[in-house]
Length: 221
Image 1 (cartoon, helix red, strand yellow):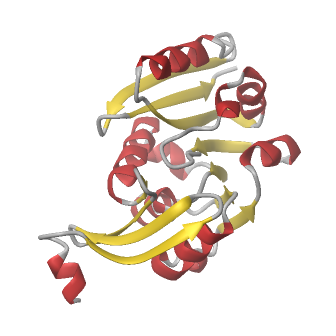
Image 2 (cartoon, rainbow, N blue to C red):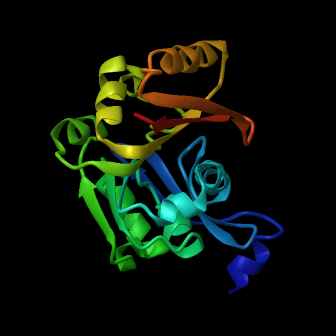
């Protein structure tokens, strides 16, 4: 494909759409691969895939292969799903929650997300879904952004306690956050201190791809 070859020299935009939820969504050939971007940041594939892959590697691929059900809050183009299925060869169930139906349409069209049989996509607000679900999960991946902004509810103790209550024994939370200023550093450290240290072990993987910091929580009791 000519566009793919030329993308090693210069990024080639092949799709752009205004979305009510995500404002601008773009699909671009960059360095030989398709990536999904918002106006100011990478949404799927590219740097985001590297960030979440790093978090999954820290949890351990062998541990992930033994899991039965993974929940993803914030699907976008589904790059972390492709990492789970194609690279780790995870065979269990994946539930993806995405608020923006336009995003899923693009993910299906350009990234073949609808061909992954073990994946169930639910169009819903992450906060609402977490309140309603009765399932327990071995891994909950939180990757919820509105361009470069993260909704405040993600860092509220009520939400984090609810997330942790949905974990199976020895389950994990992988929370992708963005650090743009000192206030965000303070926010993340406050978040960590509010996790119950008797039931969970928490750690941070700082400064991944410059602005991202991953928080990993493991249920140990």
